[in-house]
Amino acid sequence: MKKMTIILGHRNYPITTSSELLNHFDSFKPLKKGDQDMLVTNQTLSPLCLSLMQTV
Image 1 (cartoon, rainbow, N blue to C red):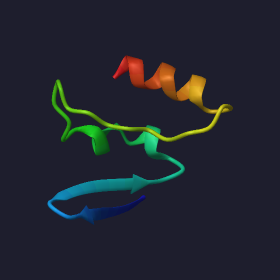
Image 2: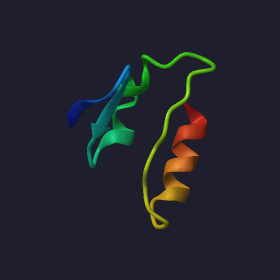
Image 3: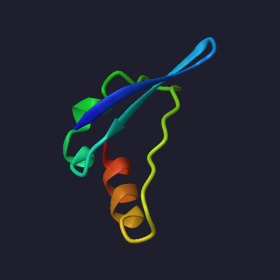
Image 4: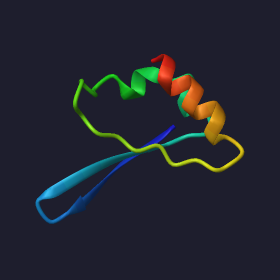
């Protein structure tokens, strides 16, 4: 798992990349209700990702 922070002016965006990201739900734990997050995937994996994310 690789983590980096993209700094754009006054805003910072944490980026996490991994082929096993969905097996590490603890990487999403800093999120609270109302926070926004983005998961980038492809057409093959998106149905699986959606199913897994809806159960968290």
